[in-house]
Length: 140
Image 1 (cartoon, rainbow, N blue to C red):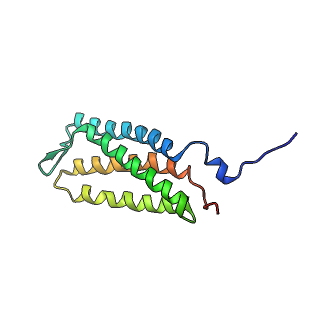
Image 2: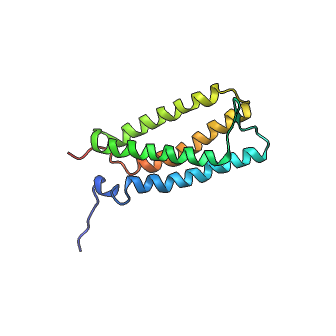
Image 3: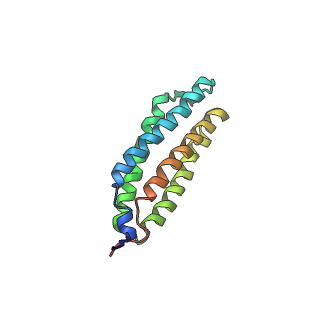
């Protein structure tokens, strides 16, 4: 009987980065849209300045973020010496930076918290899923 152990590069190769971005992007889009719908039902004014944020916009922006995350992950997998670590640091910094427009917007505190909460939920779903597809070190 022969036992085979998988190397780190083969354990992450099962599902492509793009398939992961799509699947978890949809999961995150459902979650953020639910946040928007709950906020709307709770009479949180989803208004920034004079622009009303429509609930479907939560899904649209989440899917765009997942696609950007997939692009970033695929490029780091090819180019970074430590793709997973670089991806995690980069995406956590970008997530923190994404709070700035929400927190400085001309909106109520409840609206700001709803928008920041949606960013946190999307990041919590998408980032670990994509990081799990990346190798710890680049194959040479």
